[in-house]
Each structure stands twice: as C-alpha cells, then as structure tokens.
Length: 468
Image (cartoon, rainbow, N blue to C red):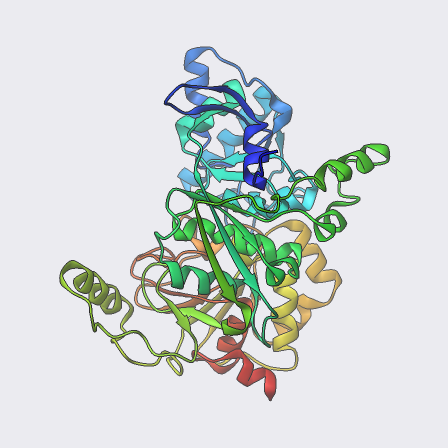
C-alpha cells in the first residue's frame, strides 16, 4: 500500500477533476471573505448573472481597513466605508453569514474562523488573503487566493489549482526559556530565506511542534507564506480536538465522535516521502528579531547583523539598501537600539494567549516613556476574555493602549499607521518597506520580546527581563 502524506490525503480527496498536464479542479469546503478582496468578485458575479453556489460555505467579516477606535460610529475614511458597506450588501443579497463590526464574533478573519470552530481538520479553506495559511494549524489545506479566484469559488465552490510540491520541517526537542512559536518560525525563515519554500506546501512536525498549543501552532502556519510556501499544516491531535470541542460550529454528540475518529486518520504515513525535508534542534532556537525588510532577514536578539562578507553584485546592493532603510549597519548589534512603537496584534499574534503572555510579562511594570504601545485583540471574543481575565487593567496600568479588534497596525490600510522614520517592534508578519506606514521601520518579534522592548524602551532579550 502506498505511503502518503497528510497533504496528499486531504488534497486527493478534494479533487473533482484532474486536467491532463494542467491544474486540478479542486473543491473548497470553507471560503472566508472580507471587505477588501470581495467587492469586485461580487460585482463580476452580478455582471454575469451568476449567484453564489453554496452561501452556507462562505463566512464574512470586515477586518483589514476597519478603524480600531469608535467602531460604533460611521467609518470616516470614504473607501473603507464603501468597502464595508458593500460587504454588508453582498452578504445580505446572497445569504452569507456576516460577523459585522460590533457583533459578538467580529474580528480578523483568521482569528474568528478557529474561534467559532468553523476551521476543522481535513478541510480545504481559502480566502482572498495570503495569511489563510493560519488555518493549516488544524490539519487543513488552507491558502490565499486572488480576487478572480474569490469570484470562481463564490460561483462554483471550486478552484483551478496545480498541486504543490511537499516539504516537511521537523523541530525536535524542548524550547528554552523565553522562546515561543514566533521565534520558531522566524528562526526557520532566517535559515531557509523568504523564498526558500516557494512552490511547496509545508508540514511541520517533531516534538517541539507537537508540544505547542493550538494558538502557537496558528502562529507557525500563519507565517508559512513568509518563506514563499503555498501554505503550512500540522497534523491534528488531542490538542486540536480539545480546542475544537464545544465550539459553535464544531460537531456535537455522535457527530463529534465520528468526526474525531476520522480526524485521527489525518496524519502522514510512516515512510511517506517529501520533495524536501529540513530538521532543526529546538535547543538552538532563541528569541528572534528581524533587522531588514523581509521576514527572512532575522537573527537571534543577541546576535549581530550579518556583514556583507561573501556578498556580490545585486545581492550586496539590495542588502545594503535594506539596511539603509532600517537605519542599521552591517555587523552591528541590534540590542540596545531605541524603539518608538510596539504593536501586539494581527492574525499572527492577536489571540488571547498572546495577550496573556504580554500582560503576565508587564504586570507591575511600566512601559518606557519613549514607547507608544498598542495592543489590538484579534476579535471581540479575545477582547471580552481580556477584560474578564483582568488583562486589560494590567496592560493599561503598564501604559498600553487597548484598541478594538481589526488588522490594525499590521498593514497601512487603516488609521493605525507607524509614522515615517519611527521604529516599531511588531508581533505581525511582514516587515516590508512601508508595510506599517509610509517610511515606517518594522522589526518582527514574539509577544514576549515586544513586551521586553516596551518596558525597557529598546531592543532587549526578554530572558534578561524574565530573570530579574
């Protein structure tokens, strides 16, 4: 009997038709939509006189360019307001479930899907957003699509897709103190580069991965595309089942038992082959931070920025251009550099576990005077939990500003922008030029490292603060 991977099992079971020497016609179980990439897709459906084939398989929420203050008031930005209004109109017209601003389950699309139990093992999931890979943490094939593909899925519930190659990345051993899942993925990307997994779908394995919580697994899978991968996934296990049990859209009763029995089969067979494999030792991973303008430009907080030794031509030119934008020099240490802003949030690290870790770290402390500190919950549910658990009080006493749910300062598509020239340490997923605002400079790090930066006012190894 042929040994197959988890990815093969899910992919092959969703192929409606294979096109000889071409892509597969691939069935999609769940389609998440938001206000940015859906309006044109709906407009094209209307022009063609086509309806939404399976409205119950689509779930919507506005997240990218919504304000994170005064959400009960009219959105001031005209384009943002129009996009949100169009989402409402289209959801009403086609009977699509919408978690709107102010509703109990509003939030970032990749946060509310798992929270509601919509995201489940063995599913195929798409969204007009690259970080759809987040849902792979549940043992699902999840990836981002473009607007024309959003239209295709709305109309047919299928997509034309070529099967990617397969990669497995194994991390074995125990993580050290102050090391989180964000450090794992930044470490991996620093090793294989921002393009190292291009053309692959990645399965994460090994004891260090299995020992992670569901929220930590989501962080890992979220950033799979930051190394060029089509997506990432982790085999479901008891941690997955415990997370899903009792959630609104999870199966219940006998259906739950049947689902779990099926989900337990979703794993890579012993002896199955991958096109490429990497193996890492968890003991080598330390708190990480980026220093350049792509997520692959990362180092341990205690390390120096790499020099240009061995670099030539355009590689050296682009490397120096990146450092020049950041205001850094080859070979220097990043530790001790003064920071202006910290941001905790996004679909990478805006879940309750992230906010708990920051609150625990800063309890009884105060942010440095030079720091503007924003905490943005990934959903209304996270916001509610943060209040109920007393985390908001701790954070506000430490000088943090808690905003309302949304993508916020992850990307410069809303009002939460980092001013030009200012340096931000962020728990989000991208550090491209201008990603957090025109001229803004971004360093990616874990919530713990961000908390350490907030209280010291400079780039700091969180383990040093934890020891005090």
